[in-house]
Image 1 (tube, rainbow, N blue to C red):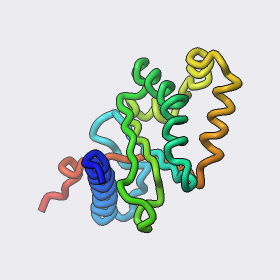
Image 2: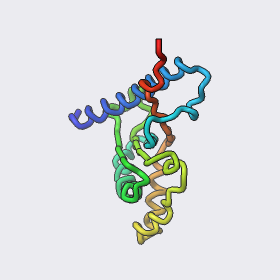
Image 3: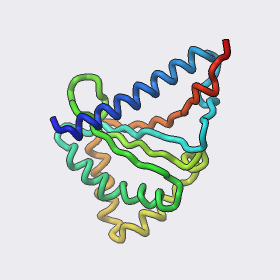
Length: 165
């Protein structure tokens, strides 16, 4: 196993553990509060996008993502809608702990950028002159998936919400 894969796995596991731990701690502190009402300590918002690729198609999926979707995300970074894009693959597979084979963490400028119009259609028209090939490859990228789900995250500032004794 390569060092890069080990580091990627550790980063993903740490991020998930922190997210779950923070959510659990917040729920214990205020059991009646809904996650949507939780305020972030800064404007940026992060969402995780998980993909489970059909067995044997991981490299093809990553290639298609890098060729067709990553440039769209980079263009949104250029305009300021997105402030960061990070991609991950689990180090191991088939152990029952990872329901996903590819993940993308996207940090948006703010809630409006995350929930508002992305302008993706215009970006795609501008970046990909051969629209027929683009649509065919994007269709293929989703054909080789078993599952896909999005997880918008609510960052919690535990220092700001800390109960005083």
